[in-house]
Amino acid sequence: MASTRTQSIEQTLTIIKPDAVAQNMIGNIIEYFEREGLSLVAAKMTHLKESDAERFYAIHKERAFFRELVEFMTSGPVLILVFQGDNAVVRVREIMGATDPAKAAPGTIRADFATSIDRNAIHGSDSLKTAKSEIEFFFTPQEIFSRTQG
Ligand code: IDP
Ligand code: MG
Image 1 (cartoon, protein in one colour):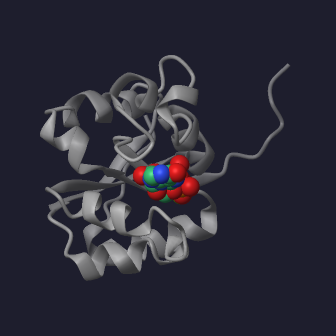
Image 2 (cartoon, rainbow, N blue to C red):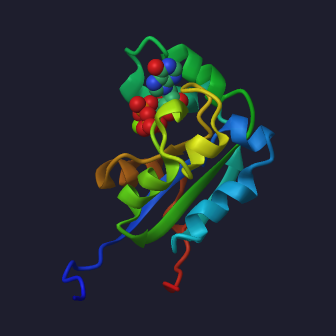
């Protein structure tokens, strides 16, 4: 029987982190999302400044790993991407896998490319609300493009 769930076209932010960029895994990682029917609508390579990383990860500022996280995220260039598609926020998280690659399901990006919990290849927004604010953090509306759904 056909699903009665209404389509929910969402946009979500991902960051290919410095470890995965350094390993030349950009193309491989984008492929994981495109083959699941998600469409890239914005992309930007940048080298985050310490103050950018601190603001982006402000929610974690009391955590023991915060300084280490900021240092890692500023250690090299990153690729910031916005993917669009049905239920994109949850689907991107599923395709990424668990934060700790040792716990990530087989075939997920973190299982395949991350080396440890603190060098885990990719970021993805954790809710629709976070996605909106994270997209606004990095992109102006003019930098996000319309795509027809394939
Ligand atoms: P997420 O990236 O799966 O959403 P969060 O809990 O939001 O995971 O943590 C943000 C990032 O902080 C993680 O992706 C990872 O890079 C880092 N991190 C989280 N927990 C730890 C830890 O216990 N040790 C070191 N780094 C961590
Ligand atoms: Mg998170």
